[in-house]
Amino acid sequence: MNIIMYTTEEGITKIEVTFDHDTVWLSIDQMAELFQRDKSVIGKHVRNIFKEGELVKEEVWAKFAYTASGGKVYQVDFYNLDVIISVDYRVKSLRGTQFRIWATSILKEYMKETAVSGTASKLNGMSYQAYGKTGSAEFGNNKGDSHAWFTGYAPAENPEVCVTVIMEGAGSGGDYAVPIARRIFDAYFNEKNASGEPEG
Image 1: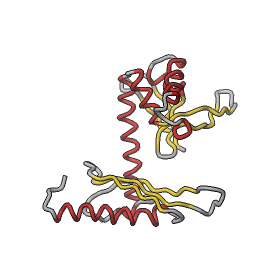
Image 2: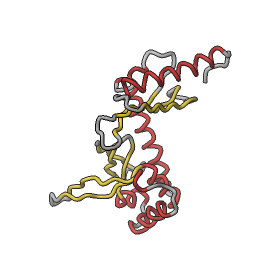
Image 3: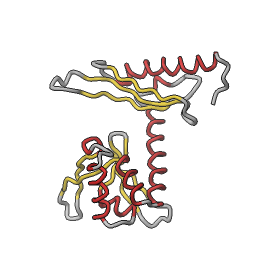
Image 4: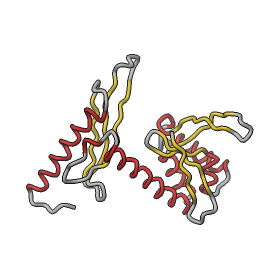
């Protein structure tokens, strides 16, 4: 988990944004500060998002530890970028649009680092640049059942194709899912080049 400082364009408001599990997170208090709305209004919008079935709470909600000024630690509800964007559409805030652009650039940079020097570095050396993220997930009671995954896109600057690979019981995403993704990317661009279609 990382904390990234977000400063609004006018430079007045600064918000500590939590970056974890490949996305950004804000609490209701932070969203209220970002969107310049009362906390009760933000809370109502968040509840309606789940009530109306727009998002599934368990997929976009987490509790993170927060240390108050007195040193006491609290468990606080946080919501990821999907919720933040949904609230933004409801409150129609210019600040929300600015935050979404900023958050997207942060996520893109993270995927770039993963592809260039991280667990997806097996994508290097191709005629095109692909960005992506790897990982592994454990399911069921048997903690040895680790499934490898990769998701990414190419070309990096002007995406044409998105690839997601999930391999059951394979282990590391970087070791097993990325090579499969590379073969899919290669097949796409080789076919495109063979057909004489100019590259994006």
